[in-house]
Length: 166
Image 1 (cartoon, helix red, strand yellow):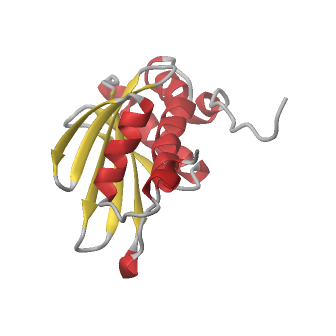
Image 2 (cartoon, rainbow, N blue to C red):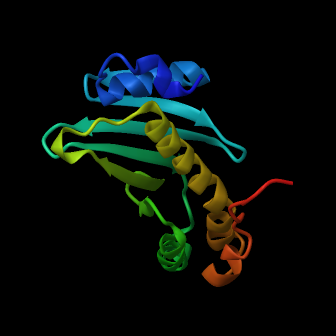
């Protein structure tokens, strides 16, 4: 059964949908408030902290996926150049580095203007895209910060998206 089939007869708050998805995947989560939820999603490289927040004012569901990263100070210019290159490759969402918090951040906003309603598959896809992007570029960020590689060299290691079946 598709995720959205469970919710066809009722219109749920977007964060309620996220909570059901987290339960479905058996992810650890904490409902921070009516309009916000935080969860931990296990990836291949590490566990990612994911927060989704609903803003009724601008009708946007925002997702932020973070992981800790404390690169040496002298590698920050190289990391920032790498972030620009990575963001050129990202179709949806973008990365930034929050130096004060020592966090690598991927963020995206799903605009639902005009009273549109998100379905479970959209939200599940958002979460999957966040984790997939973090997983894809994590090794490149590591090589830029600690591997003494240029951004162009480090991005050669980024795992390409797979298409088709084997």
